[in-house]
Image (cartoon, rainbow, N blue to C red; front, side):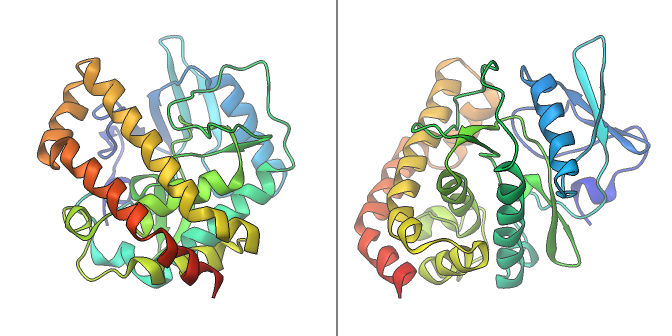
Length: 271
């Protein structure tokens, strides 16, 4: 058991970088800093439930001091360096299926266009569906080795379903060169095979399969800019992580690896 699965009443929940040290479980509730878009997000989460998606926290209330309360979802949450159990092919398939379920429900819910949704990790092409944008291992609750729920919708913004798949692939395949991948992931993960598994379990269309490698490259550029902005602002968490994980040379290496293997990924996806 890790992270949420180990928490007891009034205990800090570990994991994540943006709200590190500021998230607590209080009985059956999780209390955390409320994002700027909290009211719109709460409405979206409630609408997801109404449309049959019960694999996300239920919002309870916003507090006067700028925090939010949501229902606690029991289970296991993997923290880096990621254990092998969270990177099995079974786990990967379950993540793809869960993401598809989220998208099927989200596609039926109108996006509030009056909200200034965060652009940090958002699809630069925009879209009419609210994407999660941050389906990393720290934001997926597992039970019995399978993805059971998604948490932390702070980065949610309108976009294409393909964009959410691309962002998810970055973390779960992972779409990293072998040297970068071994820093946080178990050794021996075969990227082309796992990318195909994710696409299959999600049910990605042939057209989206052809476009996925390019979308992943675009998402990587977006994530690099996200880190650069926080380092430029003097954020100590991101500055330290950048230094510990190989600096900008690591990002250069990842981007070069993605371009070099673009055709290979496309071929495997379309086989």
